[in-house]
Length: 551
Image (cartoon, rainbow, N blue to C red):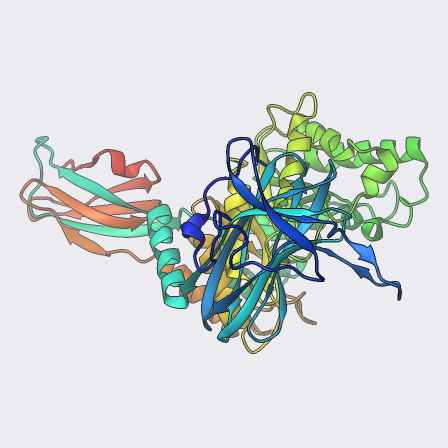
């Protein structure tokens, strides 16, 4: 993460925060527990708030109290999304995990973002929250490390729900659609005026998929339901190590092979999930007691087996799954285990994107392990490892939501986009509640609308005995309300004119979703219609597209 000598100006000029740059001393700001606070200046004259002796401490009853920054009371309005940003630094020549906290009008203490703040330079925290009621609130920053927190350029900007949604839709249109000029040229190489052009979208350009289970092999209704909707699939468990080598040296890829063969018939792309899982509790019983030499041998065997088998057949690999929350291989093999495994996977299969797949990076700002700053640091550790400079890496964000915090989700996507790597939502689901459909729509729209999100896969694989968290259909493959929502969004994202007529110059402008198209041109002068396929992509607006008609 970028660390600067002086912070930048506050976003939105501070929004509803008073004296956000501390140019008027501590006006509008207060402190907790009689902490001493003041305003300091950098050599360049930049002013910022400091506290002294506010580090975390243990009370006489044994309770650990966090360090607090200065705080400000603000007036929040209900039914608003609030985007938060601030520049932070800590004392004591170290780094510390610092959280932004908002005491909301309903009394709830909301963690609105977090970052590993540094000593000696400024780091930017971005986050936010949604307020459902109006009233006074407090904003401050805290850490359980023994540090003082320095603050500058604080901003809290409200957006109505309509404003937020409108921005999401505008962003989606800009990222996922293009205005294309199509010219119909006759056999005499002259433009065909007043020709009818029929437009059929064969395949949406934005990859949208779902998890799938082995039951699809035996249920034609499941097969039909799945393959008629999705362009990407992730096997829920069938490609994982414990599914292919539950007993040592007894490998069985038959189920995964059959699933892959079925999906390839429908041109559905498959994500390789996963090579390894860093979770101690997800290792087979025979793996856990292996000594170092035995474990290294088992790792090499597994890696070469699965990656070589599916090389050229998957578009992605989740390489060391959830290696921010877990560290089985780092603990056993060494701190560079993930980086080394990525390198070897990339050597065996050079085309797929190698993903770092993690949960709670978008979902839970209160989880200290996968916050965007730590995700970025881990990714940089992997790609800076000797020999890894040429790897095709990707950002995988599982997206298992309870109640989505949309401002935090958007700010996290913004932060991760600075890695300039492909970024996917890889396992989207929302827990069952009266608001499940509403929340799923919010998450899917937010992902689809973010220009740096390159694809979305849901984690809603069907099981006869119940899904992991979220089912899209019943056991007869009739849509449940969440399934209806998914169909509604797919239809919306595919929306385009079905036909158009060329002008006097044989041209027509079309606003189209990115994707693969079949254009059919008919005209009274033609004996038969002319058909041509074309791909509309992000570069399509830059030039004319000609349909040559040979009568």
